[in-house]
Amino acid sequence: MIMDDDYDIIVIGGSANGAQAARIAAKKGARVLIIEDHPTIGIPEHCSGLFSYYGLERLDSMPPPNIVFNPEIYGSRLVAPNGKTITVRKKERHALVCDRAKFDQFLIDKAIEEGAELLKPFRAFQAERSENKVFVKAKSKDGDTISLSSKIIISAEGIRGEIAKQLGLSPPEKKALINAAQFFMKDIEDIDPQLVELFQTREFAPDFFGWIIPMSDSSAKVGLGTSRPRAAKELEKLLNNHKVLKDRVKNSDTYYKIAGRIPITGPVKKTYANQLLLVGDVAGQTKPTTGGGVILGGIAAQIAGEVAAEAIKNDRTDSKYLRRYEKLWKKEIGRNLWIQRKVRNYINLLSDKEMNIFFEKLEKKGIIAQIEKYGDVDNQAKLAFKLLRTLSLYPYYLKTSVKLIKALMQK
Image (cartoon, rainbow, N blue to C red; front, side):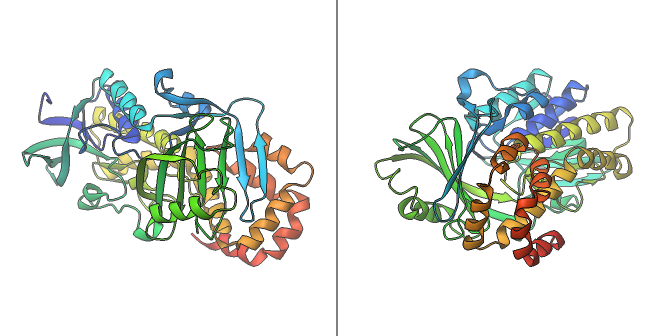
């Protein structure tokens, strides 16, 4: 149970980004409370648990070995709509796959070690400003209500953003969201445990893609994102009908399913207000290309924790001071997210036929080597610029120039 009802900072949401913000703020000396509405941290799971080593090291959040399924991801298999497969493999391991629920708990534990407190399972359902404070009401699963107050709210509450809206900021619009589903499967054939697989197909995953993220040489997290309304049904269609996948999963077993929505159109218009900061999904700080939000969102969340703690020390919780948060996170990840949004726009405009041709062009001598050298799970801007300057791809860009221009002009 919590020790007080008045805090310097209340963090709404106890997933990865909320925990990152809370840890840094507590480490800087602020009195921090995390409010989480689920009884078990990390359940339901939020994403694939595929994280880059560079990103985890930057966040000082390397998970312990006992929650890592697969520490040896070196690259990917890229599968075109017609089934053509290109393999990209780096010389050194690039990423790991972990138990996402336990990873979230690991981050919460780190925040608590720094002094943050945790209130669960309580859902924050009301917030209002009064006399330089924010008063919050939260309700338990049993219906008990508790009243709390703080000088700053950090919203890490996800795409619904109920508290954010009550305090004057907007979460991502519905049209910015992609529907996603992921099955945990075993006894899958032809898995290379060192390679993630990405399936580009408008037939089964319009406006996003399908994936296989290996946990071992026979088990994986298999999923897709789609603009269609029922992602789990679309994933079943992919598994049953895709020319590359259907034979590989015919004898497999699905033992766990998750589903959700992911913002993929980039950051929301404003991520700060008087006594309020937004981090993670509610701020749209997810990668438009892949939907991942733990690393880039974590960078922003740690900045939020630091700015909030400094605001408390300086007794400056007004929006003029807190705008520093937005300036800082945009300096760190804003350009990367903007470029990824343009890449996502372009890919979504291409037909399956045009994508098949693009894959053929990628097989040209030297391009795969460029992808292996410049490809990065988190910072995809480097590779995007490199491919844009690749002369052998210019005829393709010319043929799809209308769509390329439209992608660059879209938000």
